[in-house]
Image 1 (cartoon, rainbow, N blue to C red):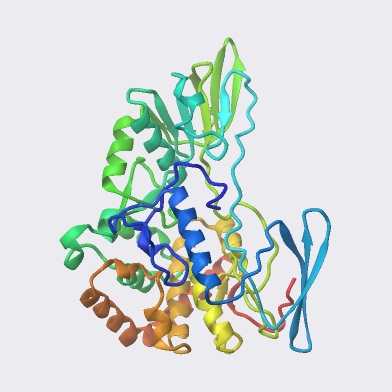
Image 2: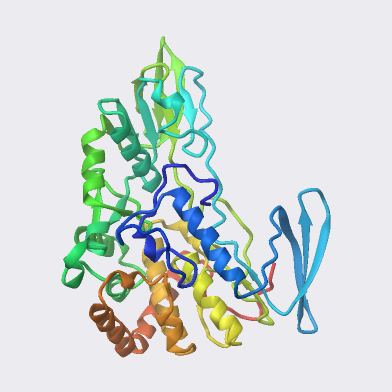
Length: 440
């Protein structure tokens, strides 16, 4: 994703909390710094260099997995190169680190030839073409990509007309409340683990509206008058204020097309309303990336427990980065088939209820972390560089850890009941793996 995404993207969270395993950054920036795309890619190079010092790494870029199968305690893996060559590998274990399989966005297909339809992934908002134009910009979408794009435009081009078509609207974690700066880390903000416990403890599988209202009011920030979507994005109060001050118009509707009729160019919306725009305007596709494409179901662990698949059709955490950290520990410890983790089909649930999705994901991670805590050495948790509680000083982290260790077993049944309720309510795959489910 980081190779193909838009060039002005920055991390959502402080850079030190985004890594592989527990590898430390060498950037030399303030701990609250939000790393750029190039800096993230440089850190990945650094991570790979360190990993190569510990294990043998063979890089097969340009090859794709064709098939895999388990026989006599081994996994047979067949790969195919871009020029058609085949490669067969025999291994004891296989990890398919698919992640979210995020693909770059194309420009929106629109009817009018009198506007310029682009995507942030193929048109840098800071580039020469955009800089040479004074035409209005219409950002389509209300999520984090839209906020990044709006912030870039209003700060790069003071006074330029920038508009937002925000769909149902989105609310974001307030970065100021989750990651307070300076000395406030000692007493301000809310550690993410405590926030997750609070959300999962309140959510029962049916009360997503009440949970959303409470959570949004206590921990979030938003730009739009209505906020129908939330998916763990972070936004600071200052970013929000800057964007709001720089936007010319905010339309709460979904774009269907841009057409020329009766001598004017008009945006057409799902509601049936229209909006005349200046010819030559820019239409920027910021409609999002996560869980948009359909992929076949595959369980997170194979029947024989030698193949691990990290992807959202059989999710065990809310983030694939955390799945990529904890599940291999269970695999290498020989516990992947013994711990009854719940899987949740995020792709299917997103189609059926975007409102329930984030709160079901929080319940999922609380349930499964409880089981993992009983199955791996404590050092696994202590070494997790992705733990967002690391933002806070050690005494505060110790309080959060102690609370989790004292309560997670008795809260586990509540989380299980919540997930079961979501499964029955939406008829989705949500529960422990069974050997009766074939690997496709």
